Amino acid sequence: QVQLAESGGASVQSGGSLRLSCEYSGPVYSNLCMGWYRQAPGKERERVATIDDGGSTTYADSVKGRFTISQEYVKNSIYLQMDDLTPDDTAMYYCVTMRVCQLPPNVWGQGTQVTVSA
Image (cartoon, rainbow, N blue to C red; front, side):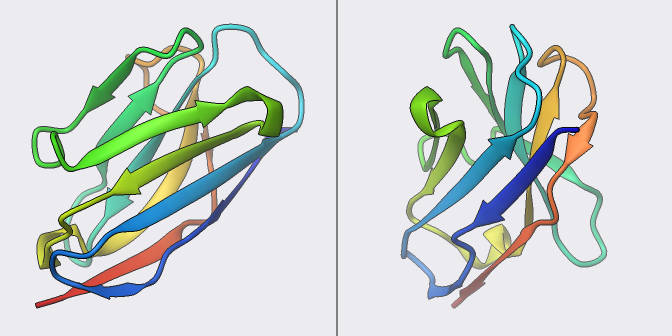
């Protein structure tokens, strides 16, 4: 059974940076896609970034140029480096897996809270 454990959420001021981590445990699948979603209060969940087994990445328009997703196979982990944060980035951030990046997630982590104050 796949489990995802996020960490790194915190409260920061606008313009600050955070690095979220997600550790994957469980069966290893080839061609697995992983990524980050977020959900702000009163808003729908938003796909933030994805990274596939080959290292190809996608980003939401709202975070392009500010967020960077990466992976580290040895540690079975992915990361989300978030720079130049704004209050609009305030949300619960979830690590997810997808069998294919274009599909909806099939496994969700518990989430880690990011709060950005003006």
